[in-house]
Picture (cartoon, rainbow, N blue to C red):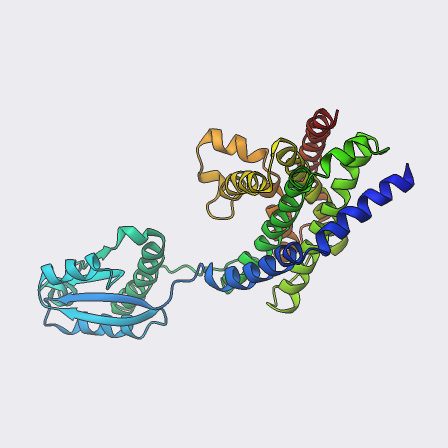
Length: 366
């Protein structure tokens, strides 16, 4: 059995690395996606264009606008002379925010009354607009605090961001991509394995070979497990060395849980491969699984903000648990005892997916 099993594993690895297209799929896209997504999937809000309608002739509005124009997130400030032009700037996406100062803005400040200015936000870019509005609000609050008479200065709060004090988006994106690219590699490899054999006509040779069904399944599992784990660790090294993301946890614990995570994904890939007749069907099936996994993982939106039934679905998503593990290992120095809270769901998911994959594949082989 050992000889037949090792032959299966070697054959699978050779079929992957001897084919130039397979090598390109394994090496090129993950590296390209890591570099592309690390710079394009940005949570920062920069180069914001602002439109301004200032009907106030007083000093206060111009002082506040001077501070806005000097803010680091602002790219250009365009002044207009009527409300229709203000609306047109947002309608044509020439401005993310629009400021409208009424004629009594400075007069209200001088009289000690609350002064109000209208802020219009492009709702088509709601997230960026809310972040930029938060920056504007901070500038206005600081200016208002300076105008408050001595002895009546309002209380101010100091904000500190734990684990990512400078809010560097790459500290969040790069570790998350480590998990998602490991999913991509392991799922594609296993989804194509049996489908490729069936499409090339070598699947019948497997059926008449001395290899037992369980040996064939293990022979398909081990190469994908090795490649997915190596790919995940390489991405981890690139994140630490190339992008400077601090790693504060246990590398051994992360490696062990990465193996468990990839194993749970391999089971899903084997099920897709067993029901696919062609490699094209296998690729489409992989993407049909990957997209919901990413959407319910908490990468783009917090799981806590999702509807209750989707939160239940997310608990069965291995990517959701491993994202918490990998971010905790990078930024939070999460101890191994706390990592277990997300390790045991991965263990259950891996057991279920691999058991289901064995049943699926064995049914196809017999």
